[in-house]
Length: 112
Image (cartoon, rainbow, N blue to C red; front, side, top):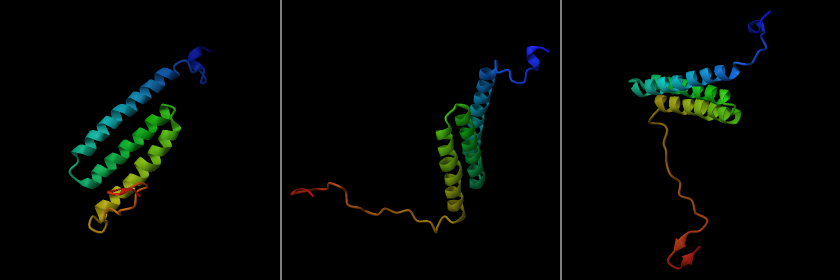
């Protein structure tokens, strides 16, 4: 039984991780270009979802689980949900500004 038959041999693990990292990076480039070149907005949202999913995989391979979890929750799930909401009803969602008082406001007579 040679060393090639050992299923627990991890001598080439760094090479395999680099191959996976390179695959995820190139996949992200492809899906980013595909998202930019889409003519239909819904397909662009799906391409952006795929891009974010590959970013999550890249962060996991890079041993950054906290960043991967944040990207999965914010980038993949929340932003895709917001984009689909905007595509379904663009006129019913209004973005506005609510003026609030700052901690220190300048006035002609000084700070308030």
